Length: 140
View 1 (tube, rainbow, N blue to C red):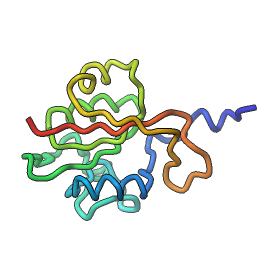
View 2 (cartoon, rainbow, N blue to C red; view 1 turned 180 degrees about the horizontal axis):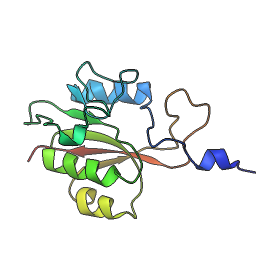
View 3 (cartoon, rainbow, N blue to C red; view 1 turned 30 degrees about the horizontal axis):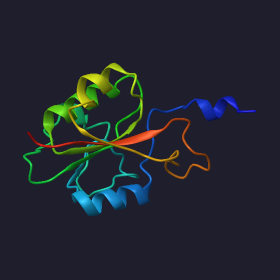
View 4 (cartoon, rainbow, N blue to C red; view 1 turned 120 degrees about the vertical axis):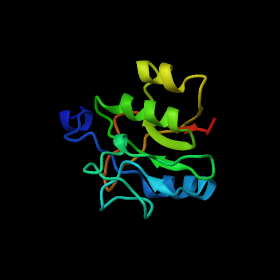
């Protein structure tokens, strides 16, 4: 039996698994984390909820990559749209291939790496109730 708590979340924020971030950081050398808290920021330069990363200049000009693990709630499409327009962004996202944002901003427009299995976010004992993907938007 699956408990109700495993299928829902009290927060749209899912902390990036450190080992996954480390692997991607070796490849991309991130300079900015656009969706962080002071406690879970993955690089020294980051935007918090109070900074509102959607209103900030991500400064992506192709010389470096930005890391994005956005809130997975109703606002996720806005984050993905900004990432697709900014270029040079690597995003950890739920693999929701049936959504409007997936077809509008990702499918046939960005590199997609589906993650095998389910991730454990932060210090959670349980795996996420959804599959994940890494999406790479490259500067145009």
